[in-house]
Amino acid sequence: MPNLAFGLHRASPHVRSNPKKRCLARNWLKKAYSGKSYLLRRIIFPQIDMSTVDAGTSKEAEIHGTTLRVYWYLLKTGKPIGVRETQRALSMSSPSTALYHFEKLRELGIAEKDELGQYFLKEEVRVGTLKMFLKIGHLILPRYLFYAIFLTTALVAYVLQVIIRSGQVEPVGVVFGAIGAGICWYECARMWKERVV
Image 1 (tube, rainbow, N blue to C red):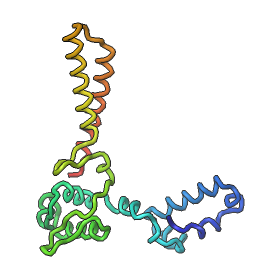
Image 2 (cartoon, rainbow, N blue to C red; image 1 turned 90 degrees about the horizontal axis):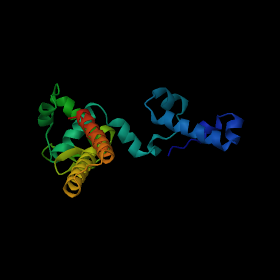
Image 3 (cartoon, one colour; image 1 turned 60 degrees about the vertical axis):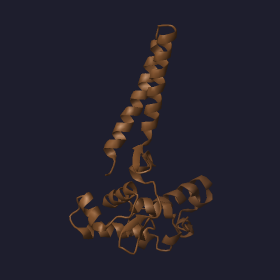
């Protein structure tokens, strides 16, 4: 957590005396400083030490766009991969673009480089749309897939059991089961479309 004493002592006396307002001011300073604003970080709050900012937050802020695509590909393959292989697989303009993003991941401590010049995953980080996916072996699947399969299976089992025992299906149970399964399948398809690679 950053040292925010510098920013808080500049606040008005009624903000400093009110604990609720002081907490709001502290949260505002944290958000303002963790952003990418050069003006806020270097000119207005230069006394706040960047090394004390939470490392997880900085990793999430740095992994986006093409870097996220490279990270996703590295996570999906699960083995050391080279720069040219990544460049071809992700249709990048040049190998130096892939190298830049691999080095960015290496500087963040997420990837490492072996003696052959290939990069491998050192640490798994859940950022962006990856928070909504599970990795099972080499497969990366949406979390909602498991809920959708469970609800669909439960609905089919319920209908079959009721038909075998009494022959009359309760429409309310079928409707609620179908709505739940439908929502999960919809969310699963939406997450699959939003995947990076």
